[in-house]
Length: 397
Ligand SMILES: *Cc1c(COP(=O)(O)O)cnc(C)c1O
Image 1 (cartoon, rainbow, N blue to C red):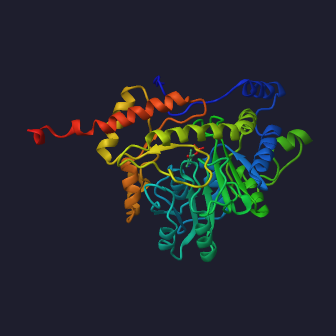
Image 2: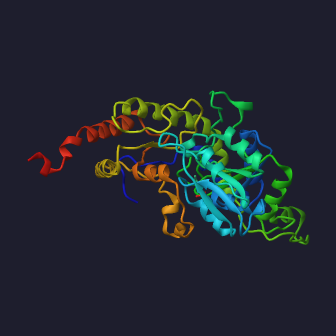
Image 3: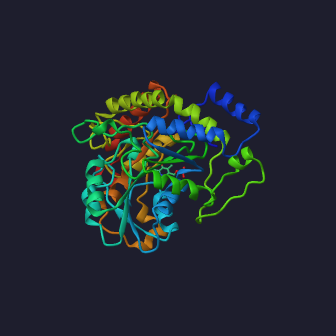
């Protein structure tokens, strides 16, 4: 692992996590069992939602969503072009077709409701939104479109655990947390997420029928689980009532997840403080865009991203930072530009393409210091001021 002076993200484990993992080891049961059940209950309570189902990862959660909703070949799922590739890959995995919609703007890189509506056909079955960086998508508009056209609404909420949704007036309609805004929401506990267990995920819904189906499909469509049989004795049999998969979670990571959930709100506030410092310090950068700078609502502050004026400035800023030991990343390349998605011949995604060419992700994690943020900002301001020096030599003659 390269030794970055300031890494992009960092784990934040303490004695609680150590004790939790040891507790599980001593219990002598490590596959799905009581810790997973408790984690699911606590997670559901945290979100104020009826059902939470723990899974191996969020990619499995997205796959399970599509399976549970019965999507198949010929179905179209509208989703943002700027996203991690999971939602699109899982669309193809169930035989359906991803239809990419553009983002609203460079300043608000979540899916554009009017472009969703524009791309609806008789084959459209669902819309997937992604709450970029922890900032909720335009859910009031999107939810209306889905109701009008009878489409399922799925939240890829990987960035937004702990965020609350506000309408365009900055109010909390029904005070809902992200995860409650569609039919199903999917979360990830991958190691760089706000709640980290290494690998892991959660699928949540308020619908009883759907939750039952998702639970069955999580574990082969079997009517009883190993844990039930273990408790009841080895003789009990089971039926298989549908063709599911094995997306089960385990006790060690559930124990980690429970600790991380306890600390989540506090860690999200730490992230918020750091983002505010970033914004104050970068405000002077001319021609740079700081997405969600004027966003009125809540966020989980998962990512801090900036857009230099053009691709060349981006490459230069990135290179300078990386040389100085500051890790950067890119969230995300535009999915239809990946070679595996060429066959879709997607068009009309100019804002997404432009965003992907310019975006840089800067370090952000709860244990980061204000000094580290300030250092990165002065670095970027210097890089931006040096601009005239980079004028082509020919022109200077
Ligand atoms: C991390 C992430 C995923 C994938 O989650 P895994 O748990 O790694 O499968 C999907 N979508 C978004 C937006 C993510 O950030």
